[in-house]
Image (tube, rainbow, N blue to C red):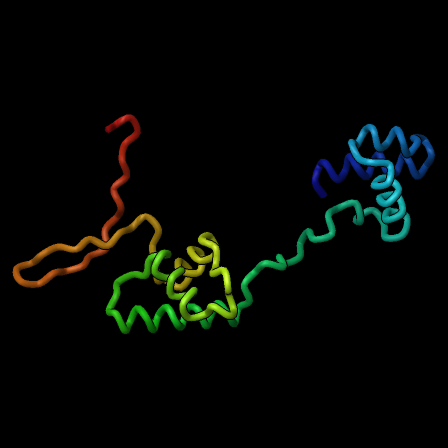
Length: 154
């Protein structure tokens, strides 16, 4: 339980013991009288843990299900092999997901979950870039660590 939750519980228990009025409790916690009544009722019926947020320790409703992640990774790997790519960047992955899975993800996948998926699958390394170099007649692609500009330099 977080510190804020413990403070809430302490005041709610004082209200339930009638050491404190609901109005005083609402002023101390910065909540409305209605919210205080609701919290008191919840503590009475469900116990002390009900002061915590109900979604703590539960998975997010916005998570991407494992089967979809596997399908996305399979499609990205297939694209990587077809095009003989060293690495798939998040931009390319985002475009490919939008093109291939437009019904499942009509808005695409946001960049942070997409980057996490790419890194876990080994399809992309953050902080690296693909550099194309001419070697005689051939053009060779290599993955190098991205150079960071030093602070203060122009």
